[in-house]
Length: 258
Image (cartoon, rainbow, N blue to C red; front, side, top):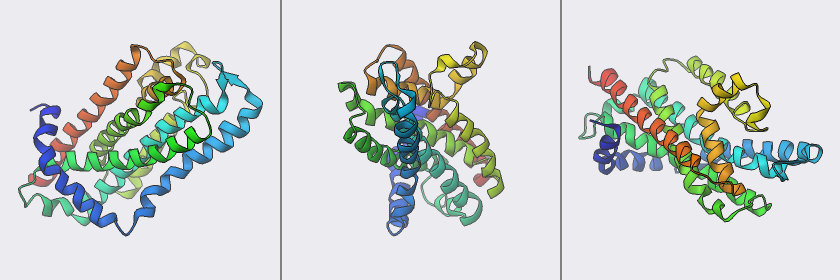
């Protein structure tokens, strides 16, 4: 069964897991919003502070150029970090899914429910960041009204990636390996400077980065440079999210039902 068909079949039962997460986090809501501040600090320290010396890039201020990249990073951080730590804890330590799978819910329901929950956290980060960016006048096109739906696509992609990756994490130390990938991806996905500054050979590696496609998608919307290639960016992210759900379902079936 395809990941898309699995998602459609599971969404009516996956929401039960989302409701459980809401009840669990209702007294710990500050932990959900804490990750919003990191990209905000980058915006003020680098986008505004360093931007004073950089000047304009592609005809806009440096802050305007960096802001959509940090928005994409904010959605990534919320979705990916929640997917990894939340699912890892429930799978390896709390053994929540052992109990969940004794109910009518199956591995597909768990994968879809946790992906949507992680995506919601990424979107929460994005909403706060969009409001901040708009308040500072860093949106330059009416296309920017699609920045939030685009952030939802970004959150879905990294939530799926995180859910799939979390099934391979065995100890808390393994999560440090994720940072080895996440930090360079954040720094070298055309976040702070154009792709053209890289050597041509390196550019091809950057183009593979999910965050690069996320940044390209949101930056085109906020700067009004939308073109057909943005459909490729969005499609690439959706496929990654679906692949992550499919992988998580298979891995959870193997880990919990055998």
